[in-house]
Image (cartoon, rainbow over all chains, first blue to last red; front, side, top):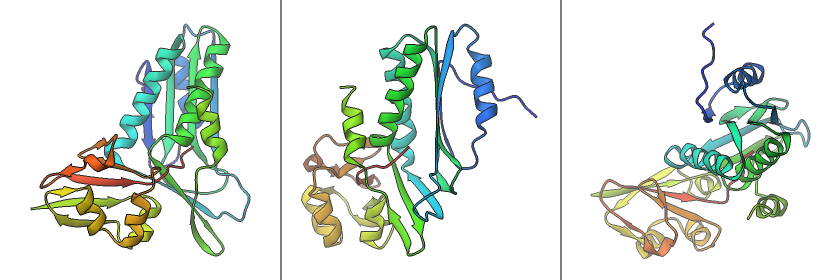
Length: 155
Length: 80
């Protein structure tokens, strides 16, 4: 199998099929050999509320460029070796990964902060729309007030 | 001579279609008059944004879409 090649300092992707978390993190670790630590976050489809399927849609001209800008902002705010920002689109089932974020830094606090920052913005500012299929049909997911409050911590 | 308007996320359900073609040029008042009333009502909400030719407008009222351009109607997001 061809080895996964990541872009540095930011590898930003929208993926329309399964996300290979182990492979991604192994490649991220390999491409940042000077980092003192790597913080990661994997967001998953929560297996509750009788959600059978979750679908994420995007808008090609805006979504990926917006995620790239966000990764660039994290690199400006903290001294990082690099970031990985991967987001699934399309149809997902409970337990599957939706989003994978990683930050490599000399020191752990910068990596933790960068991942926290990236997730808050992905939740409330990336051009992505989520709907869930339950027993009674499809429901669009509304952003929560908490999502905006979380993001405002960084402004 | 037309402008393609995309109804993204929940706006697609309100419009009943994923996209529509309207005569060019298309400005803000023209857009409000062209889209289904339920979509126009949402468009007036500050939390709904409008992009034209791949750029989000800082003021929706400045919309001036030309022939062949794509206008995207962007409701509140829910990623992560």
